[in-house]
Length: 173
Ligand SMILES: CC(C)(COP(=O)(O)OP(=O)(O)OC[C@H]1O[C@@H](n2cnc3c(N)ncnc32)[C@H](O)[C@@H]1OP(=O)(O)O)[C@@H](O)C(=O)NCCC(=O)NCCS
Image (cartoon, rainbow, N blue to C red; front, top):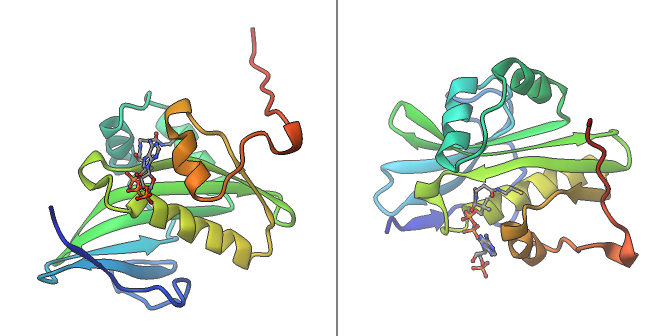
């Protein structure tokens, strides 16, 4: 297993820049030899086919690219996680949030590539997303958890059915 060294703890939202990224880029981990580094970015201009490949890798149903494009454009926050080796970068994680820009945000499409799972990256991705939303003074953060990841979110402080509140869905017939 690759050894990843955590590079930040104190102020992960500080904006050190990497020329390969637009938006804010924050270096998260580097492996022992320094050959590979991991970056978070809030850049939205990503290759949607690369995102589709990432979603394919975890077995998600395909969605029309034009709708994914619109969803990303209309999201309040988009967080991507990149593995960088030399000049090459590869998308290995993604999350986004929609929001009313004042009180509420909902997190969607949280994913880490299977080759990079179980190394703490999903947790780091969610913690970064939460920090960014909190820095925008948003206090009510919600999400819809697939049954097999409820405990993953619970460990991050998410509460199931707080005060008995139930999520409800309406679907067309
Ligand atoms: C869910 C997902 C993002 C987790 O990413 P990850 O990088 O493997 O998770 P981490 O290594 O950061 O795990 C953080 C902690 O959560 C735990 N955890 C990870 N996946 C879990 C799961 N499915 N159920 C319960 N706990 C889980 C880990 O054991 C770890 O615990 P620890 O802090 O006590 O060591 C990743 O498995 C994934 O992309 N899955 C496919 C897509 C998906 O289902 N997304 C969620 C849609 S709602």
